[in-house]
Length: 222
Image (cartoon, rainbow, N blue to C red):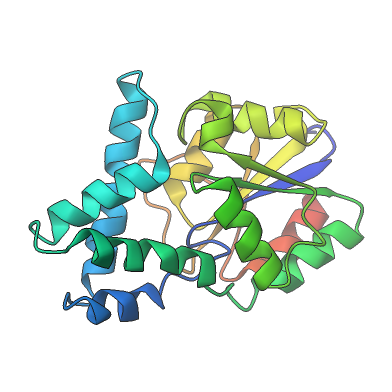
């Protein structure tokens, strides 16, 4: 039987936070809304590459460079900032609030584990009405490395006053759940984005189609 669950850390970008409205900002600057998906993938890839090579990956700097590349250097600095400023105004997914509150009410400590900026993440949580259940926000900058390196999950566990074996990481990305598992944490995967976790990643300990059901399944695990 596994260690008793004490804390849950939620991924932020795409798990709690809905990126869809960024498509309008891309259209505002004359770019196709579909470019959001390609750009966000490049942002994650380039940040992981910098981290793996031993360099710091500043979220906004890498996001800015990725946007220059994916617009084939046609976007101006002002247009790029217009897109990036949209992060602070993005809404939460409808199931985010109920999931956070249910887990918090059950006595579990709640964290947000993000590769985004601390100030932007806190503004998002406050604006979306999610700040109260969240005890700690841990960023890749604080940990000194990007997900899915084991150290960032261990930093999240320590920040929540527990050990990895007593922490569950919630994400819509199978690679994130895999990284959490490799760091010794429990993993909870929501199928909203990817539909199936695939065969190359370690199976999540808990899975569901929405965060609310996932939270209830985690409470059963706890």
